[in-house]
Image (tube, rainbow, N blue to C red):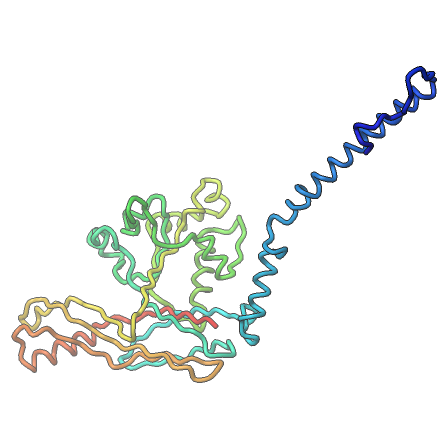
Length: 330
């Protein structure tokens, strides 16, 4: 750009102003303006736009590049990340005092193991009122329950309050089916879908656990309602499958049962049953689960040794199966 103090065309006093001078003056002015504009744009690019392109970087490296560099510096060279990770879920029922099952997981390593006891579901949040209303349904032994959340969560005691939030126990049937890889069509009946779900959930090596369905579900199955109909009525999404896995802390599973002792001319008592759960990795493909050393603790209510032994035998005969959910992760 020309210096602003220098004339475009120099002339002395008394010189003749020709037409060519006037034309050249216009061209010089245009060139000067164009040069000034280009200089301004270059300054904006260098000090603004080009710097903005690096705004998501630190020291000219992106976050991904920094993570990769730190991994290269600190992470072990032999760690596996997730490419060979695996997950298994088993449902096993233990009925004997001493029992063992072998889980052929095929994970190719010693997996991490979490053990959960499957608890009875119904009446959790309404003090068991539904159990008193419908004793013929034997809901007190139910470990897997299918119900319509919108109408029945509170009735069956499956609506929990956490501060101001109400939470329905269970997962949507649609999610449960996807997890089990159960295929269904819109023209399938609800009864057929539920039967396929149970077959998949309790497929070998899983054991069958006590399962039941709510009144609304039973009525819908009886009426042979189809998936498409339930979706159109905006009911399909709120059908729930409820389980209650409670993590076993340590190696002891404790349960209290109330025993009626009228045949012994004794009042009812609460007896504690303790079972020990142990996990052993046999090899990289197999894990063993042991349930053993069952203890029946009778309260000291003035019973003699003979009476205590009789109570223990009755408690052992009446002892409910122990249903465990066993999660393996490599």
